[in-house]
Length: 98
Length: 361
Ligand code: SF4
Image (cartoon, rainbow over all chains, first blue to last red; front, side):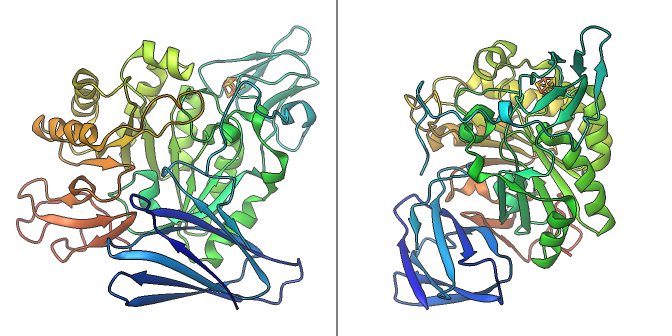
């Protein structure tokens, strides 16, 4: 599994995450876990199954104590993370890709 | 991360390359002279010469026929929350499938999506071919019940929106149309018929403002908004507060009075904060104190549901009973938590008032 951790900067609440299968031949669904990490050390895990070859979705910080978010995902997936500055904004330059 | 606009920003000029004859436009006239056409989709009524495009750059005259160049061409596809669209009274917390294309029939100087809305800047790599069936299937596969036509102006892929919304309805999906509503009367009638809920981006109440900062004009926007309201379908209004331009009490009052007098005091109104982009990077982001002031004035003047937007931790994000003030829906970020104070029919449990909030089934 690959992993990527994003620390929420102050006053940031939204991300777009995009997952793409590395090849067109998909024998998915593939797994992606979103792990929310809180300042008291607790975590919550949201498992997702990615059936689409290319899926983009919004992630919103869920509460003030949530200080980072980690992605744990299948080797066959490529994750792109985009910072959203505005709800009407659709960024095209990823903050992270890997 | 946003790309910075400058006079030298890369132009791809897709409008010159595209010559698609897949979909003839629904609303236009053939003129008798030299293969010219007149588009009737928006109030500009562009008269377009053979081989040319209209102001929006995505509707092209090919041999005397007007073609929608963006048909089945998506530039944005994302699963989001309904709150993203400044819709707070329809299924709080619902997932939506947000869809957008390139092109716009306005040119707002502060557009956050200028590299897509202003079609000459759109990079061809971001465009993917999607049929109506594929979009409906994607929604169904991801258990999404709401298609949201949004981002840069959805009116410019009108034919695709109409066709997909009709197909979606057959599969039990609903369509949300988020637009600046700079549309002709006949386009408005068609969209009211095809879509199910409406988010109006009302830039200001001043014609000069529209002319200077959006290159449009206001009368058609107000007409469309009133027409949607008369249709009885769910409608919410969003006003972007732009620093130094619309962050004035006199501007707030004009919007508030329009909603109260021309629509209804129960129509939700959102005051959202602009962030600097496109040609307006010299202006700072609108401070939340302006949003809060506008909200307080609207509540004082009798509007029942007033929200702040583009801020993510604020008391003005929650929904309250308009009669007794009890909190009904709590929001943080774009998360909504429906409280036990709201019953399934949208009534406040404490006082019984119907607050017109439709909950997820
Ligand atoms: S939709 Fe485009 S082509 Fe048609 S009138 Fe408006 S700007 Fe002109």
